[in-house]
Image 1 (cartoon, one colour):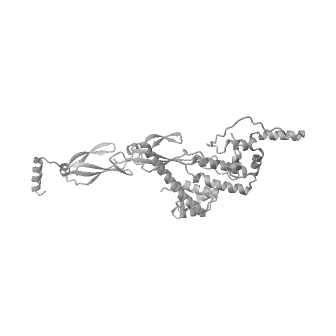
Image 2: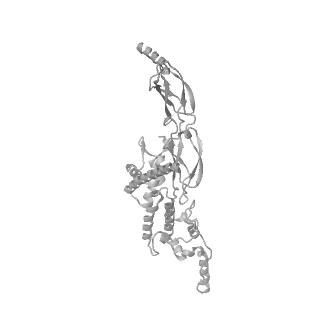
Length: 306
Length: 96
């Protein structure tokens, strides 16, 4: 754990007045405020340190302690004790602080938002005593995009996402739409000042890997039928999203006419067992490359005035 | 919109200790949405995080309404650019 120079952090010298501190804090906070730097972890960390520096330097008591012990904060208690003893015996204090240990400052804030340096020097309670920093901040919201195929979202399925190195397993409900964003509560960045974690927002980018066109929960498709079936009627097999169904074609079906297959569309989002409809447009196939016999038959039909 | 998804502006003012004028100004600037039902003003729950964000910026950084309006606009642009950037990176990943 290393000494943190709060003056340097706020770009101030040691003679800075309360007004200078406030001004410097405001200037830097405007630069690194988490709300102004979405998805920027570095800015968030800088902001926490700036807050910490402000917390200490704007409080006369904390500033005094910080100024007095500075780098030797860890031995402040020993120093106080030694000073008391020296005063009692009338001698001068010649100790020094030794400090043979080496510390490393992790720079990680995670759920606790003050640095280890701060915690050690001012104790955990100090955070609640801060005049300005009484309020908790919700952690940074994370945004992620998940690319799926249309066929992947026909049924609810479990997916594993890696967000900031953490694996999150979640069930994507059937029927999510392209461009839709869902919120996963508490899977964002750590809170500031003990505030709650941020949320994770996942936006779906759904690629259509099928021949169906989707509009919300309804599906649209085109089905080719041959001329004779269109004229005389008959039975065909129509492709739906989850298989084929038999369908009766009315005699005299026109090209471009549409039929609705109720409940054969896409699942409705978060409405289990509810589906949209499938709209099928008939495209009548006009025969080409007729045999001589077929040609003659058509000519006969023509003569009937058809 | 369901009533359960709405919070009265009165409740917001009490809970967040802000003047009603602040909420109205955010609405007039187009930063948040306000729904009026039978003369009662409500804020949709989904707008709450935007409201909180603006409140923090106003209180922590002393940013006035004009500043909040500009910030809100720029943050939307940043969001959109970050989204586009992610989408393009994802697409690029398919070819790498």
